[in-house]
Amino acid sequence: MRSRYFKQRLFFGAVRLSALVITLALLGILAYILAHGFRAITWEFLTQSPTDSMTKGGIMPAIVGTLYLTVGAILVALPLGVVSAIFLTEYAKQGALSRIIRVGVNCLAGVPSVVFGLFGLGFFVVFLKFGSSILAGALTLGILILPTIIGAAEEALKAVPQTFREASLALGVSKWNTIFRIVLPSALPGILTGAILGVGRAAGETAPIMFTAAAFFTAVLPKSIFDEVMALPYHIYVLATAGTHIEETRPLQYGTVLVLIALVLGIDLIAIIMRSMFRRNKRW
Amino acid sequence: MEKDFIVRTKNVDFFYGAFRALSDVTVDFEKNKVTALIGPSGCGKSTLLRLLNRMNDLIDGTRVEGEILLEGRNIYAPDVDPVEIRQRIGMVFQKPNPFPKSIYNNITYAPKLSGIVDSEEIEALVEESLRQAVLWDEVKDILTKSAMTLSGGQQQRLCIARALAMKPDVILMDEPSSALDPISTAKIEELIDTLKKHYTIIIVTHNMQQAARISEYTGFFYLGKLIEFNATEKIFTNPDVKQTEDYITGRFG
Ligand SMILES: Nc1ncnc2c1ncn2[C@@H]1O[C@H](COP(=O)(O)OP(=O)(O)OP(=O)(O)O)[C@@H](O)[C@H]1O
Ligand SMILES: [Mg+2]
Image (cartoon, rainbow over all chains, first blue to last red; front, side, top):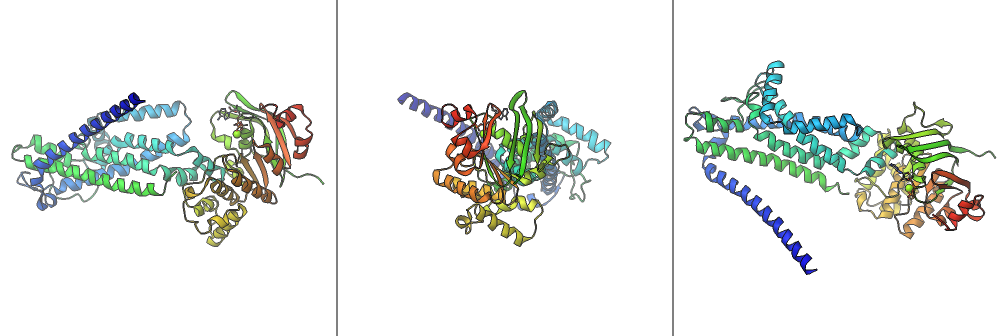
């Protein structure tokens, strides 16, 4: 008994330690960015356009651009992903077709993001003539995060007890209504988790938007989904590599990183609050 | 008087993949009576029950042969919509399975989708169904509370009420009280007794006394075959088949 107790202590100790290491690493990175970036964060920085060849002024167009792109990507990927997951879990027989689709989705998840960028360039920007635009960028990012969302939605749908489906069908409710009124609401918290992960990814990616949506510099805000936008990750990339004043703009770079992180966490927070609200009355 | 059979099966075979779960089952269920299905575990009682409202459609790789008739119409004919069959033949499962919704919405869920929109009609339906399921007095003040907060016995009566709200002709019950305590079981048996005035009830049970107490007819199944079908009194006092007697007296199974 004593030795088992000891082993358990040891195991929990190891678990705690690794959790601690991860947390510390995360906090370390955050602290580093905060220390380097917080001086750059001023009201002007958040609300104005860059000036003086982007060595002064703010990053407002990039904030707005990233918001548009991220929201656009979710608008593309969430419905598509949920519908695909519904097809895979509720309709497709567990045969060759659904296996092929699953393999395809998994492959999509492993594709480097720059490939999505090139695909977006070739298909949305050039072939469909969207030009470098919010639309092309959001579609490209949407495809990028599609596997994440399909995966999470599938898991969430599978976690809904089969007895719910049976109970509903046995009442003479159609399969369609059973899915939309019973299964989907029960799966919503899990699906939102997938969306959260997707948002984080979409907001932070640079390569997919580089050729499809991101402008080096625009002082004005986009007027339609066919306009180019600045975006935070690309802006960081530009400041850190392509400018002539790389060292001078370091504080701006860290400030931009800080804003990007805050933005992602902010979006995550909204989704987490939504999820817990859904969960409150969905106990089984 | 000519007997009125609402559901009949004719030479029904049923396969899960290559496994034959039912062989040549022919049985007639009389209208507004309680019929009990008994037999040892794995003999195909649930399989037959789920065939009667096409719930086995949900399982991939199954196959039915023979005919199952609801008022003379084969419910497995290609032009029959299983949804319509399930509206007429309701089902109560072994484990209470209310939706994670309020008590009220558990009842109104299916009727609303089937097209009842009048709010007074809906409210009347809720009260009527809950009264029929002998649950009204216990829940009338907490209709908006989640059904998950009810006790197991109350949840099962809610599931019965939920099935009744669709006003089916037939109610299938698969060991509806096997997960419940004796008092809840007694309540379920009582309500079955009152329900049979308006509904045909087909019930699977492992409890011999329960079958004897509540049913008019009993079918004994063994290894996918209907061994004997008779009036309950006859089955439990003087069965025609030796195997039935052995089972009822506890000599096997
Ligand atoms: N989904 C399924 N796939 C394959 N075989 C199944 C499936 N469901 C049931 N069976 C098999 O069919 C036979 C009959 O099962 P069924 O559930 O109808 O028995 P039962 O009489 O209801 O038993 P119990 O009293 O234990 O509930 C069993 O041998 C069982 O293993
Ligand atoms: Mg069974």
